[in-house]
Image (cartoon, rainbow, N blue to C red):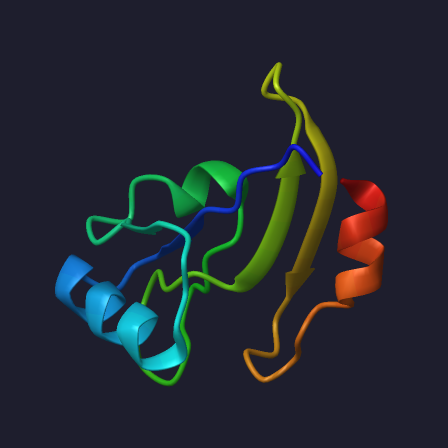
Length: 90
C-alpha cells in the first residue's frame, strides 16, 4: 500500500523492545518518554489513573507532505480502531 507504520508511546525503548518481541511487531516503536510529541498532536490524557500526560490510543494517516489525512482518537484505552477504515484512509 506504499505506507509506513510507526508506533509511538510514552513508554521507554526497553519496554517497546520487549512488547514488540512478545507480540511479533515488525515496525518501529518510538519512545516519547519526555512527552514532547504527543501534546503536539493533542492526544494526551491530563490524568489517567493518576498518571499525567500519557498518550491516548490514536491513529494518524499522514501523507508524504506531512498533512494529516485521517485521525482517530479514543479516551477509552480498551477501544480498538476499525482497521478497515484506516486501510481505506491509506
